[in-house]
Amino acid sequence: AIAEFQRVVTRYPDADAAPRAQYDIGRSYYRLRSHEHAVRACEKAAAHGRADEDLRASATYLAAWILRDEEHPRRDLDGAAKRLRTLVTTYPTAAESPRAYLLLAELYREQDRPDDAVRAYRDLVGEHAGTEESRAALVDLGATLLQLGRYGEALDAVAPITEAASEYTPALVVDGQLVAGDALTALLRYEDAARAYLVIALVPAYTEHSPFAALQALSKAGDAYERAARPELARKWYDTALDTYSSHAERNATWTQFLDFASGRRDALREQPDGGE
Image 1 (cartoon, rainbow, N blue to C red):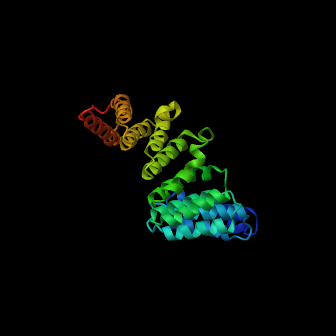
Image 2: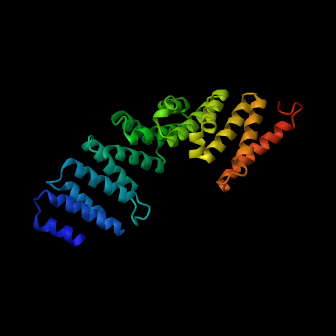
Image 3: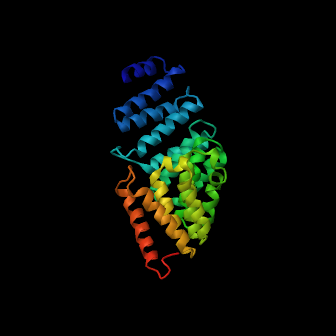
């Protein structure tokens, strides 16, 4: 296939098909895991005088994607980020622009640059509202702000999801409610945090989507009620977590810490003079 694409580039260098063929060379090399050849081909496609804006953006995005590939022997996160910044600046209306912002933010998080990631997520949400990428970015933005200790901003970031859950997928609602609960806990709003967690545990669509998230939510809700000096509610949700998920068919090793926490705290409440009632 590469030879056929190369013939098009060589024989018809000024044709509209030439940059597309060059881009397809890059894609083909990437499928062969020839990373450096793939990047060079993509960059030639992006620089081709006959390439339209969408093709330039696609070629630039693919070059960045390849550079951040963990299998690339000369992986270059800075080089990938540079290309993505070029894409969103030069081709802001291209179809690849929302994806480029999302990947750029992920690169910044991997490089331990959370402030830059926040800016990228906010640019995405501000400039490409309503896209699938901007909706997904709300949760990632909230999680990054949590990491930075900016709890009020984290809560605001996921508010579009928590306040209009029916407009979002179960996956985004579950993750958004977890971020909201964690932010509210950090803000010492414990009962509000518990209610945020319980949305996940009590709505069948969300428990079916992720039983593990429902277990986390019940465990965290119990903890939040315990912090709010509501031991009777804490014990109720610890019991629910253990009764529902201890023998769940999907249980695996990652569930253990939440089951152990719920069990330990429930037993501690039972040992109190009032039995946690």
